[in-house]
Length: 457
Ligand SMILES: *Cc1c(COP(=O)(O)O)cnc(C)c1O
Image (tube, rainbow, N blue to C red; front, side, top):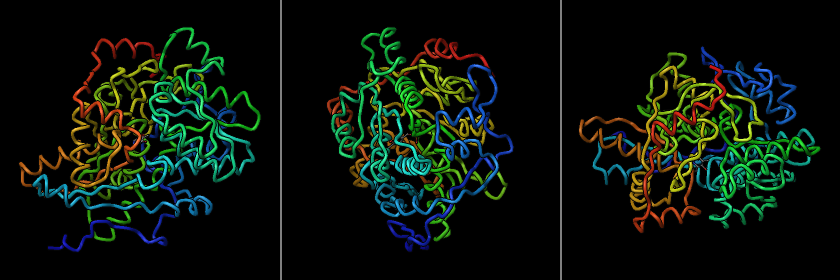
């Protein structure tokens, strides 16, 4: 059998690593909707965006035309410390499931930050340094992005100020200490350090915070300090661009063995890993060169694609950021407190939103107890302890492989294993103790939250 020649892990050689990122917007006939200035309702200009973001990143954010963007040598050097990441053939999982499907996963958890986020963190830190800035501010939820950014900033000698969602700050002290080890300062959000933080605290006393709220604080902290800019770990088109390194490597590894995937699956929070993983494959689909099924997997407790609305919305609770057209649950939406699985952002990348709206991307939602069942199953069979976020993709990949078992189809399934779950043991503990519950928001709750979007189509 030809497949016997395929190793457990397909590694690329250093010289086979991508030298460019791939910008899927260049191949989209219908471009993602532009960011709007919430004051004027007009598209944000580069000048306006440059108060918040680094200049080069603004250029990337607005670049809908260049298909390939060279990866600067300094970033490639850093990538070489932990990339290429392996593409693993899940032989053990296939055998255990008894499926004729061939399953591969691209594993992004092999770096200290434990996730794919480092791919964009290092790019954003590099451009900040190149611009001569003193430092950057950001938000972090579960802590993966903050950790990745701390690593990247310490590499380039930049100051790093992280607003961490309060509930995570309290529940994940180890994450916090990893960030501090890399020299970042970490503030629980909402805080009294910013005007918007004080306002949110006054309005919702005792709130344990949300990503949308931490974003508002980090943006305010950046624009009110000289030599600082704000950086974001997902959602933005520039982040999807940087994450295309995942898809470029995956494609190069598959091409080496002449493998053509049928289905490509990724978990979707703000959309960066999924957008990056599928990018070059989506490019082929958009250009009519090949066809694939792409599946975004989101939590049933925060279902922006499957139950949200495609409208302009605020990216943050404090409404300080530009408006983005995206599938959204409303910027005030906060998943129920029993939700432990990450992927809790209220909106979705405008690139993925547009692709989904055009029917080029499918989406499905999964319940967290089912996600943790898949996580545990995967850990026992493949050995890796997956992040809860990544386990959404595992769940969907297993479900697709089980469908193949019924139909006898030998489909090739590729999924993104975005990270490891070592800092998520409180959630695993709840699962093991049987205290983990599912909460699915009602139509009424979602409708009420969506009703508060600004009403621009
Ligand atoms: C942040 C994160 C995600 C979700 O973010 P996306 O931008 O949707 O990719 C998924 N997996 C892990 C491990 C993460 O840290």
